[in-house]
Length: 307
Image (cartoon, rainbow, N blue to C red; front, side, top):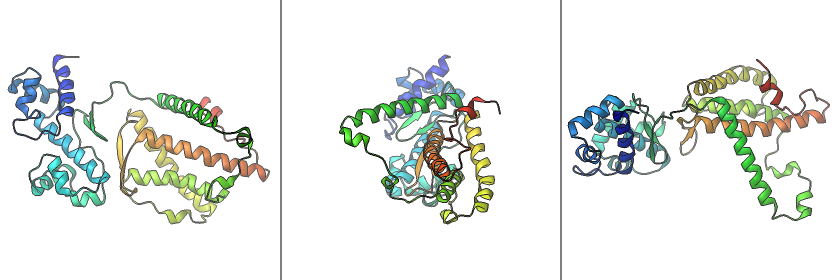
């Protein structure tokens, strides 16, 4: 790394420590940050701008605005409190800065939030719940994502075995029936939810509402039509974030109440986990009716064979 890049990394680390210092002569001021990193203010500002594409003061204001946006959708704090935490002396000043960055006033954006991150040349953003994260030096490939899922599976299996030690032999050998689930599922409802799950996340990533009523006793023809739209759209999202190495990027799910922030990788893992459960129930129900061509629906051979 160059001296400029090393200094920028040190600047980000230092800023994360003193982000809430809003005093004029506090540790987060430009003069104090430059002093801590052993540069004159003039050379410090030029160096950070050369690497980050924005001066240190603008960089800090943007990070604080991104954090403010996160606070707005994950807490019920009054907007004035959010503004003060972001370093603004008045609600009016905060509103002007927020609208310039997000295109909406804080009150309007809070009702229907969009993306947290404000475009920046450096790719450095506020990372919930409370840190500043540099872009990853190594991209997360689809294969690495699969590896992480396997690692999670092994860990979770180990935890299940550990907790099972609390049970008696009779409890361990007791047959599990579907009444462990309060919801009564059918092949129809499971298939509709498999499609709906992709549709729900497509809606979340597009910051629009999802129509749950379509899943109420949905016909097979409706399922085919929805799958033809939702399937390719969801696959496109996954391909885009995987190809760009943005598995760890975050997006706002405004459908939650209150709205929540998820990573794309977490969303993909969520879909695959619950889809596997529902698909297994479907193939078991199919087998009961003499339909056995799908086997267990195991993706092992599918992922191993060429497209």
